[in-house]
Image (cartoon, rainbow, N blue to C red; front, side):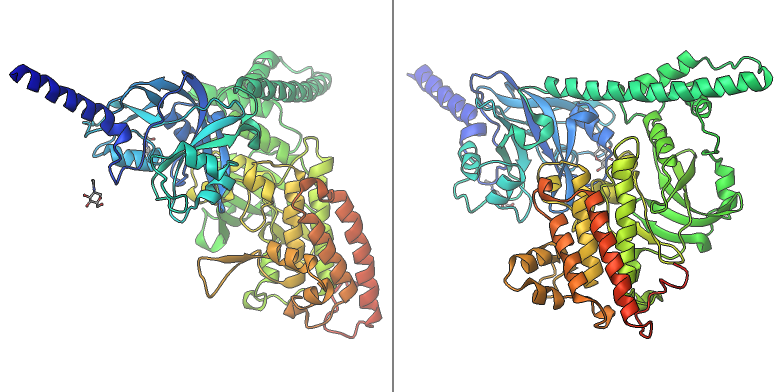
Length: 623
Ligand SMILES: *[C@@H]1O[C@H](CO)[C@@H](O)[C@H](O)[C@H]1NC(C)=O
Ligand SMILES: *[C@@H]1O[C@H](CO)[C@@H](O)[C@H](O)[C@H]1NC(C)=O
């Protein structure tokens, strides 16, 4: 009798205990691990909310993945990450039966609580059961919630609900179906209209929604990546070899030089392997650093690209506050004089890799009147100094938005057209005429600089690619793949970056030239909401009377002095650039051709005014 009672009691306890974690929802529980189906292992994806405090390599280490398993994803102007992880069927404390987890570990810091680490470093996706003891300095193993589904066309994303998220927003962010999300998360979601921040949802995302997760495994992608890298390496090795041989040839011809101690084969292998290894790691040892320095100098072109930190300090009077001419996500910009030339020196934090320097050297070789020239660089302990030609007249953004406040005369229509044409030529050059087809990725009016005669030059070209490896919070969060207000739908949704990304952003620049408005305008009534110029252009060109609608938003700083027909033409080009479908957008060279016509027309228009007006742009007096 007694033993019977004990047995039934313990059975009851057992049932209670086993089912508590998964099927009896504590009203505050934010996560339920996904119970295993017949699948034992799959690739899953973890959505990492980026707080901007860790570099990609730190994030990779925290999740025990390689940096290339981390893809950026845009969420309302912020860059987060999708992390592809192996997900397997396991048992865990507090879980009845088995469920899907990704295992990783972290080194415990003093005073760390598991829940804090989970929220801070793992977007709140750590499975926490009970109150585990964390010992500072030791590795602590954690299980992150992940999921597998039978449907091969989908990959499950673990997504932590953020405040103000709705199910349909999450569905569109991750290319999933809201109903399917509901079905996969019935333990949390009772009413699809009600989802709560911090819930960890399993979102079945269509694999082909994001390019890099195509195919049944990542292997497929690897093959492509490696193939591309090898091709690039072979091509660049070829180029380097030619340069090297030429230099050697020259040298030995000139003065029967003593043998160069740097054997080419060694230099080549250093360059060759760099692409395959961790692109984010610093050179490991002093010796490696030294050998890299040698490699760099071995392939230097006639022009000196590399400066010493001492030279930079001298040029900027030790980074004197009075020399500061700008400050942005990339770092601080100083004015300086180097080799009797005025320069702008950008000081930025950086952990440099070989790849990084190779990239810089390529950028130094790009010369075009409408591209701000990178003259060279210097590298200190943890800083990089980029030396640019000095462009004295501020940015287009400064000249367009509240120009008088900054001491500039408002730009005339003719000058605006010329600036548009100049910038378009600069972008066309980096798209079509550089060896590697570059994409700027951050075209905007503050990246278009003006010289003394208001000639325009595209700045910060190539930087987006380089800064991915710095620790600068702001840029990791907002600058890495462009600027909100200039981003086309496909880079927000699908992470695609093509020359058409720049074309889209250039459409916004044209719209700014016409309207004088900023790309994003805060709504005074609702401070949380912003209006974009993109939407404005869509509204105008999809509406009935586009011309009147456009005229209504023309920049007041033009004081009514403009050829409306040309404004409308430029508006049409802007709308064309802003086509939601990248294929429907023009190529940069087509834009250059159209703007050239507009320029001719603007000159004729200005001539017809007889030069007696305040809009006279100075075009005939030296430009
Ligand atoms: C849920 O959280 C609230 C406050 O956050 C707390 O008062 C309540 O006891 C919790 N309920 C359970 C079942 O843990
Ligand atoms: C967690 O994030 C903080 C910054 O938010 C960072 O300092 C720390 O190193 C991270 N820890 C791990 C294990 O990644």
